[in-house]
Image (cartoon, rainbow, N blue to C red; front, side, top):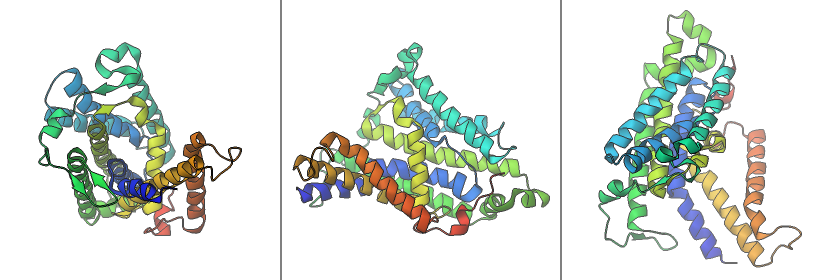
Length: 331
């Protein structure tokens, strides 16, 4: 087995663009779920409107990238308002139902053949990242070689931008959650009736949390789209949100760096197990009746899933979390 190749792709996954996008999605979800107790099962929709905000603006209408970023952020705010206004005054499970439905509606909207002219339907859109890579200060260089892992100049640029966004998002979350505003959110998570009795507008605070987490998730959509220089609607399905929840719980809910560490661990495990199983299957380590190369991708999810089940049994608060942070009252 080629262990050098396995470790190489695994190390790249720790700091790769996919880990960045999921970290941003999980940071936003942590604001919703970890700090405020909002059950948002449609985080993928916020990444989708961000990614398509750039893609449609640039690829379809030929407008500048900065305008696409602005439209994507505005779309995330509008989506949060549309989801929050009818649900945030009700029990938590209503928000869960509405958000998971909204994510599917948006995905199917982008897939609609009648809108192919603007969204590309199921094929998606390409050729919208030129302006972003035109700003690349590493262009023309050989990138960076760290021995086992190497990154081209384009990959290095998206990594610098992506991790800068992750650190800025963590800083914003830390500052806000250390403020009186953040303490109100945590109090709402514990007992919103008590907070309401103190004269606080619970609905307003929940809405602000939903908008903030959605905008941070939207940044993950930007990274995902610009790294691949393409968008495709099925990328932003409900599976994306469930992975983000896994990452939040793995790292620890209501911990600033929990989603970041959770994303890195989650992806390095997936990539390492997938690479190891594929190599083992190619080298006939396992008999074909046990597992073929094409089945390695499915088996990795089984193994990671079993690991997460054990984590939830023996340490439900995650790596850095506090068990009390996940004891939510679903009212």
